Image (cartoon, rainbow, N blue to C red; front, side, top):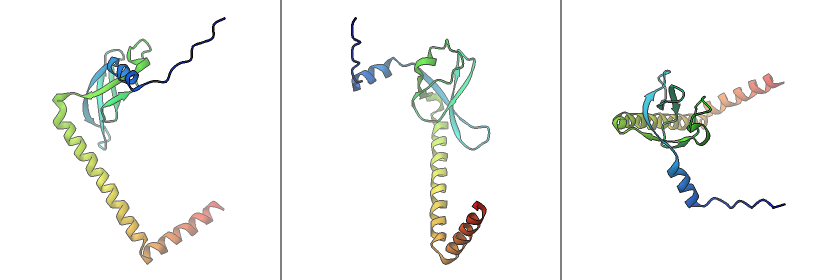
Length: 134
């Protein structure tokens, strides 16, 4: 009886070869129906529908429901369709603005909590939370 061969660890070259064989899918940036965040979508010829992913290039697991899809096992590489470059620039601007706003709100909240008024409100909140948990 033969002993199974030990598998060797993946090298950077193995990873590069694997990624080069991966199918590439061209995506379009769209705004989600709730109007809040951006997504990348592409048409899947096997599922006959759009698949949606976070708006970043790179490898993704396929959202295919059809098990015979060639994407089902290995996934695919997302790339922005060049015709939508301007729309993607708008997407990136909105995302960075939203991040800036969140950071500004966090900074204002931290500054307010450092004041005596903020400390009093925090203490009141903690007392109410302690009563609710008992």
